[in-house]
Length: 143
Image (cartoon, rainbow, N blue to C red):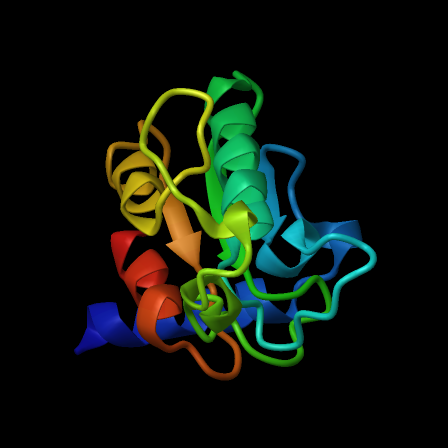
């Protein structure tokens, strides 16, 4: 019980941190930053561009020797949702950008991202604010 309360306190501290007081050796990766500028993604759906962004950001943080830990957040302002999961627009079959592959250089699947996080040599924490559903929860649980 004591350990759990300490973890909750640590998460509260992380969520209330501002960019000005986050240590330089901690990488903050916001899911919302993966959304293309011309698209709306209010629920941080894990569409192809977001998954590609997360994979690149995670790999960059893992390869940077100055980074000691990684925090995944939904949005930089800690408002809204962490992630509502898969982008249902990709299920329609009308948009080839949703095609996923685990091939090197291909669009990463959610499973690829989970394996990347689970196999990380650095601690990865998911700081959840708001809703966390489906694939968003899978992503959070892999941290």
